[in-house]
Image 1: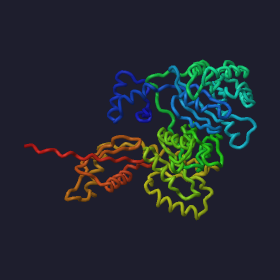
Image 2 (image 1 turned 60 degrees about the vertical axis):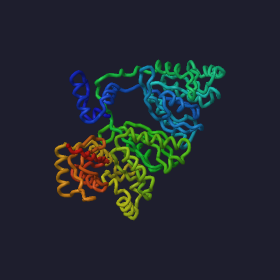
Image 3 (image 1 turned 180 degrees about the horizontal axis):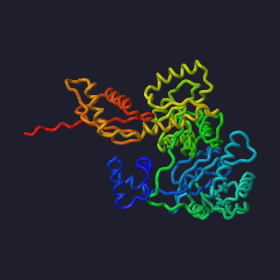
Image 4 (image 1 turned 45 degrees about the horizontal axis):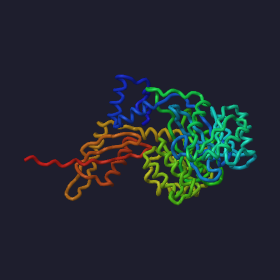
Length: 485
């Protein structure tokens, strides 16, 4: 629950104010324990940042998963799986910090490997401290020595993790890493968890103090936007264009992005949190290794977002994959914007057929704002923010109960439910049970057919707007009461 956006600034709540806020939250249908937890967990100020760096396949992402306590970073037993710098939040001994996983750093590389190395260098520059991961079973390589020179140049505090020390016999290998000149090597097994406690204690000493967790500070933060779509439709290019920098690795290889990447971007005078996600492929259960977990990460990113910008390649026919991705966003209850990419590459004939495809295949999301863009040239990017804002406004729209019931009364009078089996069910009254997305509960005298429910939804949109948001309409049938004798 986003308390700031739902109720305005909830800062400095205490005593009677706190009780009043909790009562209001309960009236809106939120779980009191959940609201109290959100308030209590709200911190303030920026968290310290720890970058995890090293050459490819030394176990950086496995160590990240071990520290955050869940399988979040994509891991596979081959080099080069992580490509972008990916941020997670971690906690150790009551202190919170941000953990940045990076792709493997290599020297004198070209193409996509050079882009990956550049992302790792950006992460070092932005971090407050660095964990340098070395494979103790291999020892210090020329590439490791080059990373050491890079770290010395950056001047950041460094904690040396000697990874893959699975038992006492491997500790001698870790001791040899003193020669790197970075201080004590901490022997760890990121796979089994051995030694990670001592490593984390050293990390906390290297990091600046985290802000104290306080009660009653303003909660919320930037609105969260997930970029989703099938592989190679230009999600990373779009993120780089709105960010104004090469934030994410882009390559003509389909499926370059594998982890969700969060980026704070100022666009249209507003700061947004953009989440660039791995492309969703056709059949999740047929995928292998990293691509399988990337699809799971994409679904998780969608769950964390408030609005989904669904990117569709306008130069290609709208596919079953595109439709499935749209369905995922709608079923997740997110606000939706559909962006047709590569618009500048379409000739008149293709534009004509694309319009026909939209009319035929996307009739179920006619309510979603549409933007025609070019991630490559930046064409029409200025239209993206108004579309996102319109979708979020619809997503958060609340209809007063009195106005809603007056509207329902007019509908029942003008368009009553068809008679079925000699009976004609009636809508008695209704209420909006929640927002984000709008949820309506209709109380009726009998079962309402699916077609009539769709009619009600269509009329709700015509009357109250709800641009860019799915609407959930549920019906509760009045129970029959037994006659008194």
